[in-house]
Length: 203
Ligand SMILES: [Zn+2]
Image (cartoon, rainbow, N blue to C red; front, side):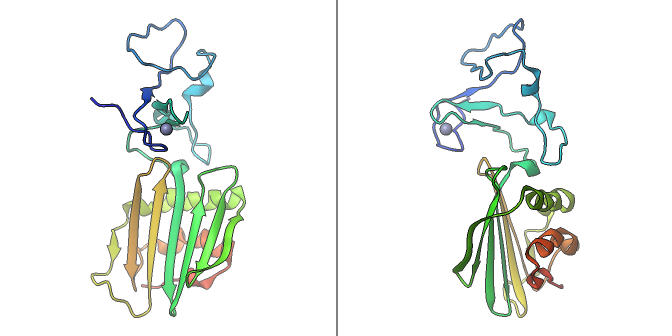
């Protein structure tokens, strides 16, 4: 098996991370131990944004070139969401919200209307970020159809949702004059945070 590429810098200078205790025997070569104290049990756990324990989701690789840890498997959680693009075109106006959650301590967003920047890297509160992530967790847009309505023409509106995880994996969903059944629940935090009625799309 070839070496896994680093999703941050593309280097192949990556190594498996082993979690264990000092007295455990390590037979495999090239293991990198990041924690100075291997007995440190805390490093065995990862939590979702809402505190749910994600035991199976520890980083399993380490990049020697950029020093970042990452998980190479394709199982992603909402806490792993890095960037969200939400585009809504309605009444001949084009709105694009770009949420940057790559730094969970400093979430921010950019809003462009008709390609003109209205807000750039504006801070949003961690609480608001968590409300948005809750929507992703509860209403699972990753399981939506890839496109709502057969055609790509529209008379009222179209929308596009792109969600990118920290390791570069992403998905895109869209619709023309049609939204998924749980859209109104999903979109609620966006409505509340931005107090905008453009999110009230009806099928
Ligand atoms: Zn790297």
